[in-house]
Picture 1 (cartoon, rainbow, N blue to C red):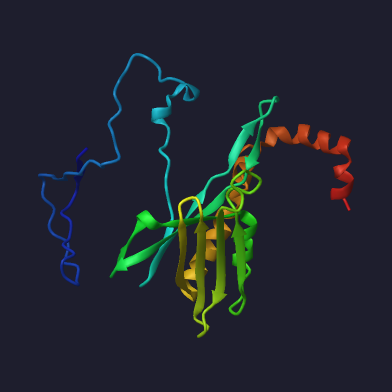
Picture 2 (cartoon, one colour):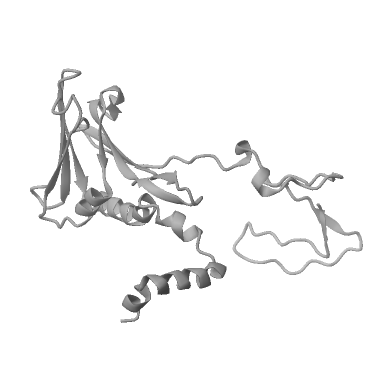
Length: 245
């Protein structure tokens, strides 16, 4: 809505503020632009529906995020994947599968061009993420995955991810080797990671790990009124004695 003002606004085009202009009896107006995020409320004779009856379409959309690194011979994208929950008979939920970080490697086919149809993927568990985060400037580590371990195709797909320090000490390089006898694929993709990029990865991992473990869901269920019931349960289980030491 337009708002009346009692005097003209000074111009900020130059580096000084002009003297106050004489007031006029005819008020001037500033026409405000309606925000793109604001919708006027409509008058209705019916009350709004309760929050728990809202359809899924009205809920926030899923958001996809990731961190990408582009180099001369390859590109790497790392994206978090959420944990999975399963319901209990009591109506509560528990984490049935921890989240992970999905790494996607794509070889370069030209200057700033990458063939994502030939991408190779590697899923980092929470523990493997912790191992990467603990690497020092001269440390290295490697992870071996067999997606079909314990099944009939065990050994037909082998993935080996290595993280080793660069010779000049400016960072690490990641090397993913994939041998897939099911698709007749034998490929090795490596990409150097600078100290700055590795720092960003560590910061992102440090932030997302509690979410991969599902701890955010637990924190969102903590209510002050439930503390009495929880404390009674702790007393009966004897945990209170351990906490009091």
